[in-house]
Length: 272
Image 1 (cartoon, rainbow, N blue to C red):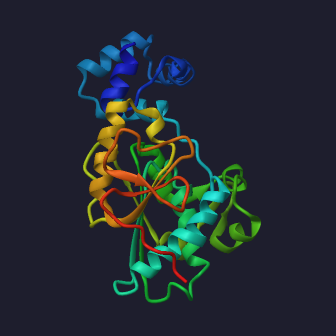
Image 2 (cartoon, helix red, strand yellow; image 1 turned 135 degrees about the vertical axis):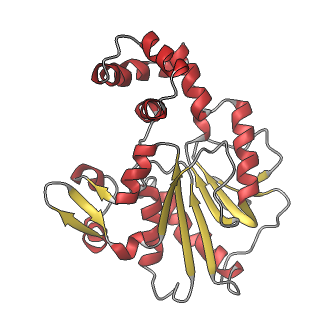
C-alpha cells in the first residue's frame, strides 16, 4: 500500500498488515477534514507535493502515541533503586547525569524520570541533571513541551500525591507540569534512525517499545545509533518484549532485566 510505503520512508517504521487497520481508522477523518477523496489521492498528493505540513500531519495521525506516567511501575522502581545509585557512584566526580527518553511520545516518561530526581532533592543537590525527551511526532513533542495533560492522562499511572505536588490545575483543560519539574527536561523532535541528540553521550537511555515497529535492518541501524549516543559505562533500557539480538554493540546487564550495556564496558558495581 502506497501510504504504508510513504510512512516507512518518513519514519522508518513498518506498518505491517496487522496494523493496516490503523490506516483506515485514523486517515479517513484526516482525509475528510482536508477534502481528500481517497487514500490513493492522498498518496499521490504526498508524492507530488512539497507540502511538508501535510506529510507531518499524516505521520502524526499514524503514529502510536500510547504512553502513561510511570508506565510499568517495576521499571521505575528498578531505575530509582538500582540504576540511578549505580550511575551516581560512577559520576561522583562530574556530578552530572544525562538521560535520554527516546520515542517519549507526549512526554510522560520524561516527566516521570524528573519526579524521581525532584523527590530526592537532597540526594541530588549540587548535581546537574539533564533529561532529553524526543519523539518523531511533531504534535506529541508540542504537547510534551507544553506540559499540559487532561484529567484522563494524569489519572493513568500518576498517584494523587504526585499530581498535587508537581502539577497545577488549569481551568477546563487539565493539569500543567510545575516549572520546577519542567526545568529538568528538554524536548525535541528526533528520528531514531538519524544522528543522536547533540550535547554529549548519555548515561542512561530509555528506548522502550520502539524497536517493535521496525524491520530487523532498521533495528540494527537504530542500535548502531544508540551505541554512539551512550556512555561507555551507561545503560540502555528496552521494553519487556525487546532485545538487542543481532547487534554486537550491546550485551545484557548481568544483574538488571531489560538493561543492556555497551559491549566493551565492564559492569559498574552497585553503590553501597
